[in-house]
Length: 222
Length: 276
Image (cartoon, rainbow over all chains, first blue to last red; front, side, top):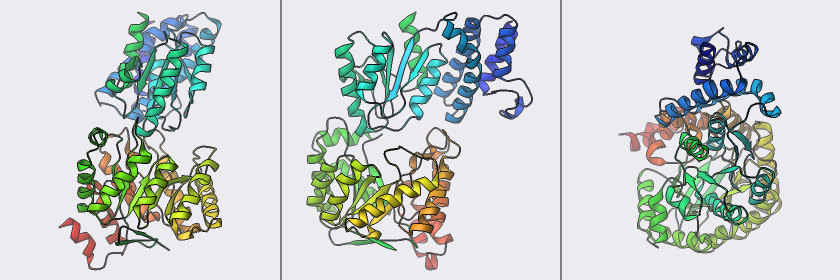
């Protein structure tokens, strides 16, 4: 059993989606995260074990390698694709409630900002950390964040901005959320954002890289 | 076709047949915290330093962006424009999402500026095109609209055409519309750059307009960023890019090498000027 979980983790770490995927070249013609996850479930491995002992550690490794600049954005996205191909098999268990995730994370780029690479990396890392991610996409106004929070009480919020000109909209959104949901936790990130700015606008956490966000969420629920 | 910009008296001609004119990108607070702190203190020394170093590195136009949280850019943008004008005779590219700031800057700038940028959204065209007409400014037409960013070069061309038509209808000269085809990170989408390159070719072939792009971010998330940026710049120039918004200290040699190789630099004068 541990063997197949180890194989799934390797596929995710190196971005092996499924058998027909030619990437990475040294794993050609091998089963990928897709087939192996199916096989694991068929062999009776519990979905939460696959999540906790294959997906989560694999994505943590990916995040750490990215933080150390050993891999780059394309490798992260390959890993995310492999993770998604495993996740597809786990989704029915999430929906039925048989497998619980750690919590919900609402994420989007703030109003006026269309740059979504950073936001997407954070979203995939947090999903890979065992959370349900509600991705509101780009150019998300305050109202949309509030609505999503109303529909998912207790969710943690992530705001992303790449430009100094759109960063200002982060403040409005944080203020509005904190007014209505005093206890909600808000993470902010993006190139111009700093810990100082995070504190100034009343957000709860800033991380310069996706893995920092995952670690923060982990600490919230442990 | 020629787009002519002007500082106080110096004219810069951007010609669709080249050579390439670099619009210096460095007066921009994103990733430049020192610019934010100095501007907050009302200290323009660093802005002027950035202007001077870019001019020395062969920027012929300067992009000016002073957007950061809490800024009153309707006040600050014209102040910075005046400070630059007092020291340097160089055309400016006014860069702000706030049409009021652009207008306030145009009022004091004189010469002939470039507005960065008008996109295909009704709101953007309605706010900025009349201002451009009133102050005789050229515009950058950004190939995105209410429907967001398309990855189809033909559709990006359509958006550029739409802005061009609206501008011309208001009495703005065709040659004063410079198209930005949009450049996105190739790390997130392996086709991001080829879509841009194809759009440049379409705009060049079908509209014959000058073309700009802010392309330093195409290399985001990858190693050897300067190499990627230089290759993308070279291929873009081959396809019709004529006035990139870029960091001249990093890209000017590449740009002049491209001009030389494309037969636009007799006796390699411009290349040698910079590379010797």
